[in-house]
Image 1 (cartoon, one colour):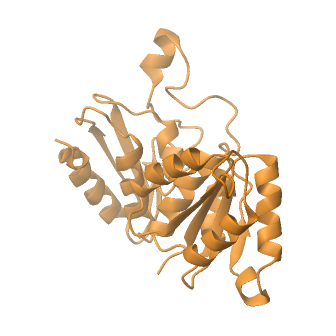
Image 2 (cartoon, rainbow, N blue to C red):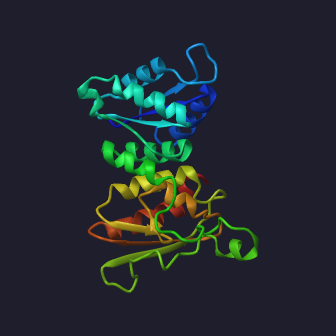
Length: 247
């Protein structure tokens, strides 16, 4: 079992689209939708949300993500109506709907706890402590040239340290480190007993990896410290050589 997710939206189509995206990265996670009103219109439904919570919570709890303020209010009401035992296993995330759902789905797929899944969802709204846009997010020649380059200021794992293992590889798959391989990398790294960074960001966070914008021909640099550090390097080397299974 894993933490389940409930997507609450004013639009049934929007909720289904977000679920479709998240399921590409977390096929074992129970993801329920509560989109639109009971008669199929735009709005929210207390009954739909309550039913979705019941379906999503298979024992490890459920995390709710909502799109707009009134959806949040309806979701909060649904949680209040739960019995005490189930209410203790349900949380409502303060997170952007799409990014939060994707981050939560990857965390849940990795078997993380409800609290950890919640934290991943809520961290998807931005990058704490980052004062400048991530590499590849700008425009112009300088931004393109710097895309995917390691941010030495953000990476406290010194490659010169004897306890740190490192490796660098050129990405060969056409789409680079896009959503699906980023999710696979984050899940694999989350299982390791090591602190792992890729180009200066937390390798266990799918949203952080996706901010890098690493494309074909760019360099992915991994640094790791801990009991499984060498294994992290070996796993990444294999993934890059195989083009993340896309070539």
